[in-house]
Structure formats: structure tokens, C-alpha cells
Image 1: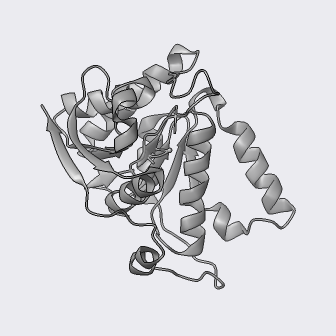
Image 2 (image 1 turned 90 degrees about the horizontal axis):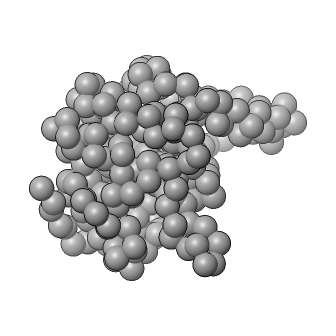
Length: 240
């Protein structure tokens, strides 16, 4: 699996706290009514340290970053580390969220799209892999979507969980339970890889070999385009 160009995260894409994909999605979550658009880096310093280490690992492996834009939370830490290391950073953000998420110093290139659906589709198209950092509802929603796209055959890109301090242990246990009960195939279980450190996770993503269920529809992005998953032409902004 060639992830030498982009890693994607919701993803990471990288996904982080608020909204999903590393592959590269780094996304954040939104909270409540009064706290809508509040961004969190988590309560533990280890989450922030892991975000910075991920950024440094991408630089060391000469991998670029595609993420949900913005300069705050875990996604801000990763994007800053990647940018400081001289790699390309692409942020994709809906126009309506720009005043809320583009606060402070923003790095790299920013592409604006109309809505969240276009944001996710554009990040997925640009990335070669996806990473989810610890996060909340938004991270989980976008993470499961790119996993489902892989199950449907829309893409064959690896999806990784940066399982800092066992953050995703409960989710992985749920998935294994679903496999045991016959709701998820053993092949589909292999879509997800996880590791406690950035170095281990990136190595696993690079070694990933996709498997395919015989019943998978094997959709391709051209077909997805026709059902409006793919973004329309967008504006491009650049930040030094």
C-alpha cells in the first residue's frame, strides 16, 4: 500500500476531536447546544503528545496531511507539526464553519466546500489512508463511514486507530463482538488496524493489504460521484 503521497481523521485522513480522516482525516467533534463547535484536545496530556508525535512521524516518513481544516484541538497540533516539518498540509472546511474553526494561526492550503458531506468526500478522495485520533461523536461518525465505504468496495485504503492509552479498546471490543455474533464478517474486520503509537500505526498502514468479500459491490469513485458523495469545484486559500 503506497501512502507516500498522502495519509488520511475523522480522519487521517486523520480524525481527531471534534468532527473524522486521518486519509488523511483529522476531524473534530461538536458538542451540545450552548457548547456547539467547542473544540477539545481531551483531558489527558498524552492525547496532545500523541497528536504531535503523529505529525512528526508523518514528516519523518515524508507523508503529507489532509484533514478537516482549522487550527484548534488535536487537529491543530498535528497540522502544525506536519507544516513545521516541511510537508504539505491540506485542510478541507465548509464555508459556514470557517469563522468558528479558522481561529489563530492556520497553516497550509485550505479548500472550502459547501457542506459536511462534501468535506468528507473530498478528504477521502485526496487521501491514501485514514487515521483516527481520540475523539467524540464526530470522529466516530466519520470513522465508521470510511470503514463502511471500504466494506462496500468504494475504496481500498487502510483505516487506522491511534489507540492512545487504550482509548479505542471498547470500540474494538464492540467490533469483535459484532464479528462473533455474525454482524461483521472476518474479512471486514481486517479493514481496521490499530496501534498505541504513531510509529507503529504508520508502519501497519504501509504494510496493509486489503481483503475483499466476494459479496462486496466493488463500487468505484466514479460511481460514487453520480450519487453526490463527491464535492463540487471549490475555492482554494493558501496560508504561509
